[in-house]
Image 1 (cartoon, one colour):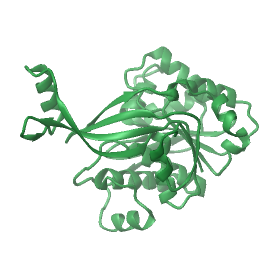
Image 2 (cartoon, rainbow, N blue to C red; image 1 turned 45 degrees about the vertical axis):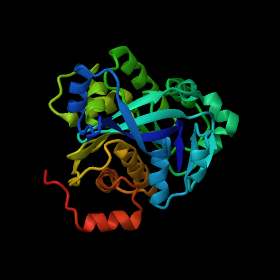
Image 3 (tube, helix red, strand yellow; image 1 turned 180 degrees about the vertical axis):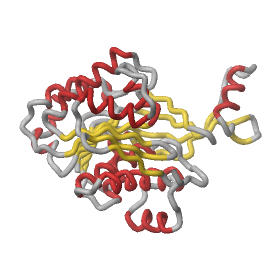
Image 4 (cartoon, helix red, strand yellow; image 1 turned 120 degrees about the horizontal axis):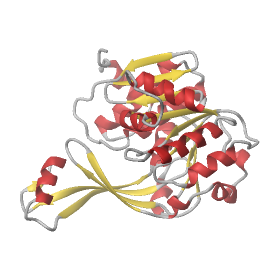
Amino acid sequence: MTTLPDGSVDHFCTVVEDGTGSIGTRDAFGHEILGDRSSFSFAIETTEPGGQAVNTAKQLHALGGSVTCYGHLDAPIFESLPFDTVSMGSPALVYVFGFGDRDVMFVEGSEVAEWTLADARRVGELSDVFAGDAICCSNWGSVEGLEGAFHQLSDADVPRVPFVFDPGDIVGRGPDEIGGLLDAVTALQDTFDVVYSANRQEVRTTAAPLSGPFDDDLARLAAIREETGITAAVMHARDEAAVVTRDERLRVSNYRVERPVRHTGGGDRFTAGIGHALACGWEWDLALACGNACAVYYVESGSTGGVADIAAFLEERPPVES
């Protein structure tokens, strides 16, 4: 397995109130910002190697895959990763503020935003970078070079394997930008079996410039797949995952989260679950269930689950009824 191309040093933080503990929700934080206070203190609880490519690689490794992460990993913290890494530059610096309902991230940019396919060629042959049983690529929302790289890859001499692509946070992008993204994904399908994987809001943003109206999310996924000609369009959400291929429309209920510990990073584990399943040749119902299980385990525990961890989790956690 190969993952690429980002990387970040992630500081997980809490916003500290004056002697009364931490601010628990985004709503409470918003009221404080709109009130009389003009300064805030925060505490860094943990610091971890991160980035979508790194998070995805963590999950693929935990599932037993042989993984190489090509990312922006020039920092000592990445030396602890238990899988092969190839660095193409300096990582971003991310502060993740954890609230009870959702996390908020502040990102200090880096060389990641400047990444192009030339950076991959600088560290290896494309036939090596894109070798393996599946590729997981993420973060078009922050890595502008991905769009050009996809067009260049359209005629690359590399194996045709599943290419799971998570665009990252694209909510709020305009129709022209989304159009450019869809054109790039269309070009990428010439070389790989592309799987476009995004959360519900990102799917709705992607489908917004396309001919509607749409009855539901399956219709949006179908429109994305038909516009681009890709192998599959996938959505992940708290209640379900869904996929549309040329011949199939499928929904799989998600597993219930009892007490979430993390709100950020679950989507990366979902991407890894899908990539692992496709590399193994599994059917789509099992692939979606694998993605769901990896994501929910992480969201509830705050750690990346191995095979035994996830198996034990599933034994006592039925999926949400559709």
